[in-house]
Image 1 (cartoon, helix red, strand yellow):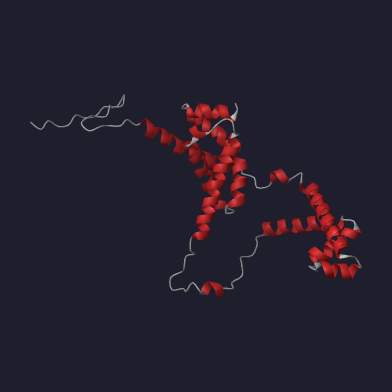
Image 2 (cartoon, rainbow, N blue to C red; image 1 turned 120 degrees about the horizontal axis):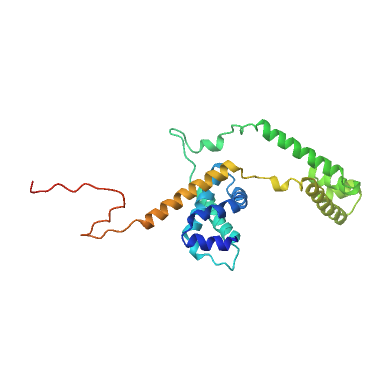
Length: 245
C-alpha cells in the first residue's frame, strides 16, 4: 500500500495501520531530528510529538504531496521550536552561586570515552590517507593553507606562485579531497545514525497508546443533564438505594 492509501484507511478508522507509517519513516525522521536537536534524549520526544501532531491533522494531508515530505516538515517545525525554546531558556543557577561565576568556570570538558576516541582515530587516518592521495601540487597547497593555516599570500610567497594560482589549487584540492573521502566512506554512509529496533519499537508503542486513548475519548458518549449514560453490555450496576426504605 502507498502512504496515501494507508492515510485514507487510518482516517476511516483503521488506526492500527498508523504503525506502518511510523515504521516506514522512522529512520528518516530520526536523522532529521538528530541534525536539528542534537540531543539523543530529546530526539525520541521530538519523534513522538511529531507523530501525534501528524495524527491529529491527518485529515489535512493532501495526496498531491508526498506523505514523507509532509511528515518531515512537521518534524522540522517541532524540532526547531524545541531548539529555539531551549536557547531562550536561562541556564539554571545553583543555589548560592552567582551566575557570573559561570564565565569564570574553566573546568575542562569531560574526556571522550574509548568509543569516541576510536572514531576520532579512524577519522584522522581516513583524512590523512585522502590527503596523501592528492597530487603533490594540490597536496602542498592544501597542507600549507588548511592544515598549517598560512594565508594565501604567505603560501604564494613560499611556493613562488601567484595568489590566484594558490586559490585555484586549493579549490581543486578540496574538491579532490571531498571526492576521495566520499568514495571511501560512501559504502558506509547509509549506516550512519541508525535508529535501532528497540528505540523504534519504543516510539511506535508510545504513539499507538496515545492514538488508542484518543479513539477511546472520541467514542465515549456525551451525557447531557438529566440523562443517564447507557450501561455497557455485559456490565451490571447496582440500583441506588430506595430513599423510602
